[in-house]
Amino acid sequence: MLGRNRMFFTYFHMFIGEYHHSIDEKGRLAVPTKFRKDLAKGAVVTRGLDSSLFLLPLEEWDKLSEKLASLPLGQANSRAFSRLMLAGAMDIGLDKQGRFVVPEYLRLYAGLGKKVVIVGIHTRMEIWDESKWEAYNKQTEKEAVNIAEELGKLGI
Image (cartoon, rainbow, N blue to C red; front, side, top):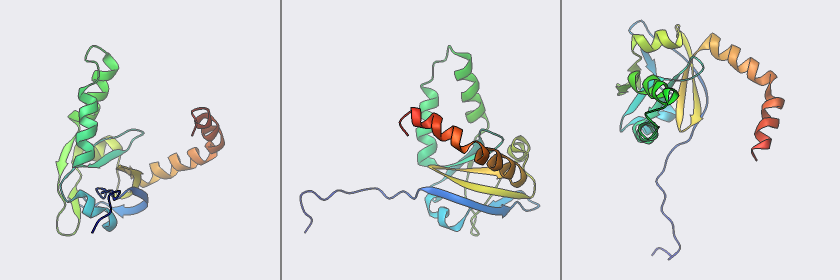
């Protein structure tokens, strides 16, 4: 028998870590095994930021698209950001090997070569060209102290 104070939670696997993969000649990319279950109900891949792609489970995509829909239509930056995210979006499904086809226009946008890195960022994954990720990561590591100080001002 469950106690009165027992709480129920919907399980969601937090995306964390860095995974090196290859895109095959057909444009297919395998999702890390530990993340596949979270994409079983569907997922969306779209243009990301910093020359990356975002890969989100359908539930997280729904949350993001609702926020985008609520942005003020009268502001140019709101319209531009909504277009970036929504016009580039593509529903994806995984095949039996846990792969999906990365559309060519998204591979071009992110400058993806054969070697890519899939990075877990809490509720989404980012897909980076391996050399771009290494350069970005190296630069961020150099600036880590300054970044931490700025975030400290925000209480983080």
